[in-house]
Length: 232
Image 1 (cartoon, rainbow, N blue to C red):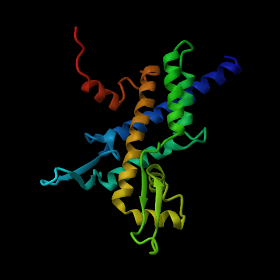
Image 2 (image 1 turned 90 degrees about the vertical axis):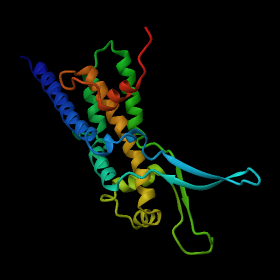
Image 3 (image 1 turned 180 degrees about the vertical axis):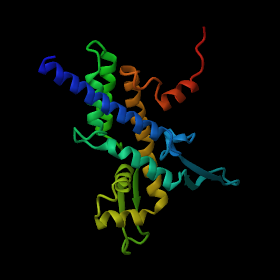
Image 4 (image 1 turned 45 degrees about the vertical axis):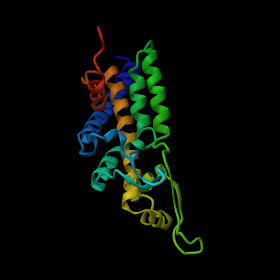
């Protein structure tokens, strides 16, 4: 065997090991309590508004807004599983750039559909977590002392996820001002987006390396079950 062949075999083995590591992490994520919720794909996006109707005038007004808040411990655990994948340094074994490079290595040259999926995955991972909602909060009296909050939910979620790495007093003060419910609501959205990113990455691995991932990804299976049967 030539040196070039040995190098090629070593590269293939390294990429295969990367995908096996990703498979284990993804399946651990899919089996966590948060991922098993019926609303796992919609966390941080559910607002229930209560309206009251004036019987005399018939006019309605907003009486309150309720957020669906998952358990903090479940959100924290799910994001802990996702965090290694959010790294952007190629070479970190679970970083998304390393995983996608491994998938690209095994992509057949004529698999244009898979190439499009990989391109979309790169864009989505690079933008993770996306912005969804702007959070604004301030004392009723503009002259009063207190923390003013003007942040996107993905910024809040990042502070929650990387709180042990970022020790800025401003971050701690902001999270304290928001309170657990708002922080967990925002972090829940990050978890849901992470579920789908990991799911879609796993699905491409299933297409390219069914020997490693013989079954469709967890959420892909659920979505397929929800689709109505096609008419013959």
